[in-house]
Amino acid sequence: MQINVNNKPLDTQAATLEMLAAELSLPAKGVAVAIGNKMVQRSLWAETALSEDMHITIIKAACGG
Amino acid sequence: MTELTQEQKLRYNRHIILEGFGREGQERLMQGRVLLVGVGGLGSPAALYLAAAGAGTIGIVDGDNVSLANLQRQVAHTTNDVGRLKVDSAEDKIRAINPDVKVEKHPFFLSEDNARQLIAEYDFIIDGSDNFATKYLVNDACVMLGKACSIGGISRYSGQLMTHVPGSACYRCIFPEPPAMNDVETCSQVGVLGSIAGMLGTMQATECIKYLSGVGTLLTGTLLTFDALTMEWGRLDFPHDEDCPLCGNKPTITELKEYAFQPCNKKNKTKCFQTN
Image (cartoon, rainbow over all chains, first blue to last red; front, side):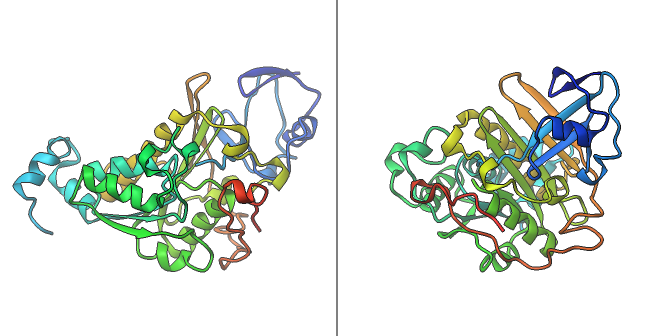
């Protein structure tokens, strides 16, 4: 299916957020994921199903100051 | 509460006539005590605008000296300040802008040994540090002490910030743990667009001014993100995480320990982002 990750279209085989995170090799720490404008806690990734055209934002913690 | 002097009525006129802010808001701001953790890219613009706004007391904790590579974004410091302590350099600018403001200098780095005592003395904490160890230390200490804070971060062309007040979600509700060391990108490694520090730092000052004066709605439960390449702002809402290791129902972090306090500089480039 096609989804949208950080404003770019992405074809994915992943059915859940957890599978998407694995597909994109997201690090285990320091990364947050939102669907629309709502963040999804990591503990819920496995049960969060992806759907066509879903808008996903992946954000890394920024340490600069 | 003391009456505003004639000079103060003029200096703060644009706040005083501002609907919703007024003399009362200004007087509350003038009673406020804010602590800047770091007076670098984020802390510099925050310091200048808080000084101009008439924040009562600005504490600055920073053990670093001004270097030439700081000047591309750390606007409280000038070419002539290179080599000076940042707290001294920033104090001069704050005093020049507004002699009403009391400056408290803490010329050392925030650590697990001094964080509680220092943060307890202030009303609002602005994290403008350049490493995860300090950001998590500020967050953890503020949650434990029931203090309000703004945590900001910048990298490359983007920035992010959030506000915490007692009871609201904390930085660990978004990012329970800092990234693994190999995944961390510091500004000294990947660079940062200097003006972003100004945008995010002034927003942190804005949150502080709102909190102290009592106007508006704070940026709690939301991570504000900015991307300079597309000029897009984002608001990502995050709930208070019941499983948060710090502020959740069964916290596992109950004391300040095992942070590594290595400031980012050339001497310890490889250590500056270690934590836990």
